[in-house]
Amino acid sequence: MSINTNYINLEAADGSTMLAYAASPENITAETPAIIVLQEAFGVNSHIRKVAERFAAEGYLAIAPELFHRTAPEKTEISYTDFPSAMPHMQALTAEGLTADLKAAYLWITEQPVSKENIFSVGYCLGGRVSFLANAVLPLKAGISYYGGGLDQLAAHAPNLHGRHLFYWGGKDQHIKPENISTIIQAVEDAGKDYVNVKFSYADHGFNCDERSSYNETASKEAWALTLAFLKNN
Image (cartoon, rainbow, N blue to C red; front, side, top):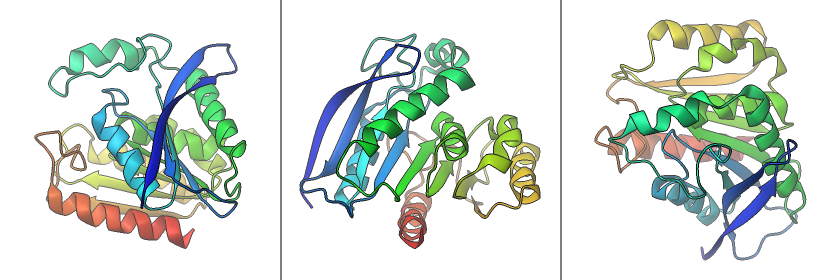
């Protein structure tokens, strides 16, 4: 499927301007679903842009907002081997700021000629945590979190989830402890919310990214297939 891509400017509630990468099928209609693609700690880099393009090729309007826009220049891309450079931007993020950013992305989607009832979120690493927040603060149909570090810190938001949530974890991930996973899953369970919890025992943190040394092709392909089925079923 042919797709269109471009950068757009969004204005958050605090008055800040946020750049976002958008990808969409050539012809969008009132039946076209939409998805907010949420970055890793390394920016809206080539990997995240390719993810947005893959969703567009599957018929989704995809938008990837630059979550570091308050502290980093536009189009900031940080090397996967330079995590220390990402830390100041990550530490500057707040729930309030992220909520404003998510609402700005959601508002832009609703202004497009797409299906307002079929808007989703997906996030990777840092974005996995933000995708969970998105499902709690936006009226999404469903959300997806790939190896979301710090998700346990959002356990209090579990009762606010609007749609089903799909979680992916790597069994070899040394960054996210089993007890952290248990905390967020138990919170969703206690809240009575529907969810799917998937652990690839043979995969590491960042297994979906083919630009990282931890890339696992098998896990990535299997997760992609399940992701598409999960979205379609919702």
